[in-house]
Length: 79
Image (cartoon, helix red, strand yellow):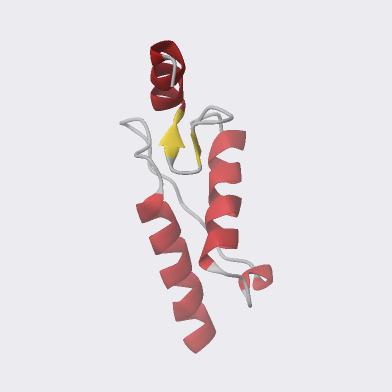
């Protein structure tokens, strides 16, 4: 039960830290045995990858804490 609860907490925190998904989608994540021993960052990377494969997120939508739109805006401003 301890491992199952840790996996659930890691996945919930990883989804919480993501940019919001487009409205109208429900997602179900199932933890596999490979989640054991993973860090929150590794789980978050895996979940973001799954969302991209589902076509709900663009390739570089959140990297280093900045979205594509904020990167484009900074480039347009010459920063």
